Every structure is written in C-alpha cells, then in structure tokens.
Image (cartoon, rainbow, N blue to C red; front, side, top):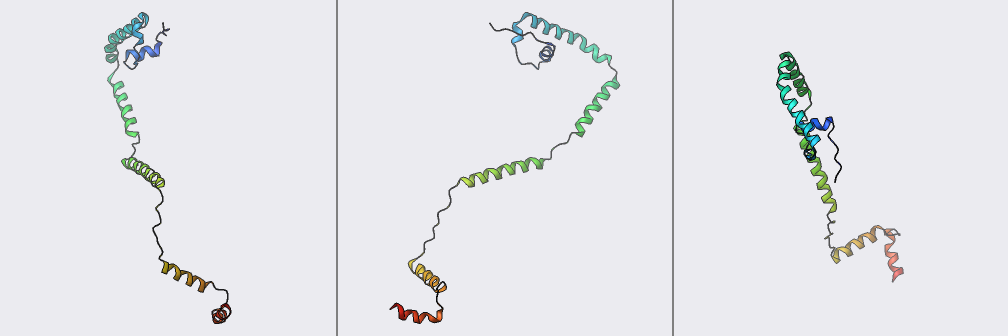
Length: 140
C-alpha cells in the first residue's frame, strides 16, 4: 500500500480552487474532510468578504491591473516573421550543404587540347622565339 502524504495548506488551497489535478486526496478521509471544510468556509465567507470591501478598493485593484497590462511590452509581429525567416534560412543552408557537389560536365575535344598544349609550349618556352629555327636544326 502506498504511503499517502496529507495535503499541506498550499496543496489544500490548490485543490479547493481546482488547480491541483492529483485526485489521490479523495481516497483519504482526513484530506477529503479538510477540502470539504475549506470549500464550505470559502462559500460562506465569499459573499461577506466581497461586500465588506469598499468600492474604492476594487477601483484601485482594476487600475493597478490595467496599468500593468498597458505597460507590458508587446513584441511586434515583424519579430516573429524575422525569426521564422531566419529559421528557414538555416534549414535551407543545411539542406544545400548536404546536397552532393555537381559533377563537372566539361569535355575538351582533342583538337582543343592540342591547341592548348601548343599555346602553353609557346608561352612557356625557355629559349627566345628568335632562336626557334636554330632549335629545329639541332632536334633533327
């Protein structure tokens, strides 16, 4: 059998106002009697308490609540959309980073490759261009 902890004053108030969701107190006769006594005391003194307070008290309470509500800063709607846009940009960047790199589809024709090699040899030759005919004598 589970050991039951009786309701303390704070839990008793939460149960009597319907905030506490735990219904384990209904199984205990002591807790159930305490909750019923609290509900009866609240219902009999509730109307007397509200009538005992003057109207200026309630007016001051309303003004206090409204002043807090009016001064509470409200986030502009643009902030929400900018946060959504930033999140979308991060998701898009992550998705693009995970995509494979495109394959290079550049094919060089043999004639083009031979032309590029000839140009490269002409530009990068060691001997001066004026001595090229002498080089042909020696290579034959």
